[in-house]
Amino acid sequence: MQISLEGILANSVLDIGTGSGIFAEAFFKQIPAVTGVDVSEEMLERASQMVDGADFQQASMETLPFPDSSFDLVFFGHALHESQDLV
Image (cartoon, rainbow, N blue to C red; front, top):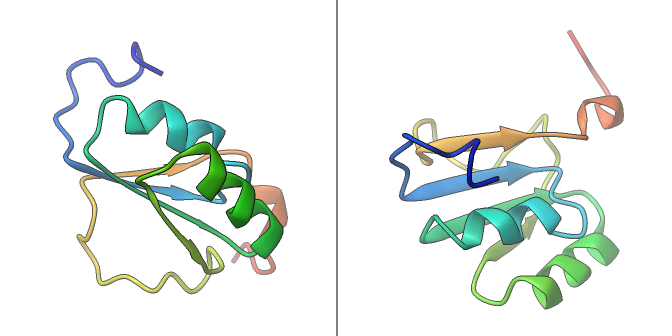
């Protein structure tokens, strides 16, 4: 993760489809404000245990509860196959 963030100045990141929080944890080591969203309450509980200090919320990728430009960086990995509407 460190190499992929090289040269990027971000103070906040949104991890869409955060799952267990594995990517949120990596971001949290370099970015002060990490928010993760997922539709699964069980996954959000795991993520909260893994990354103390990040903000985890239940939400779908199709209806994110944030205004435009709320984050400096948005990460969307390993979740596209979960989308209900790819159009």
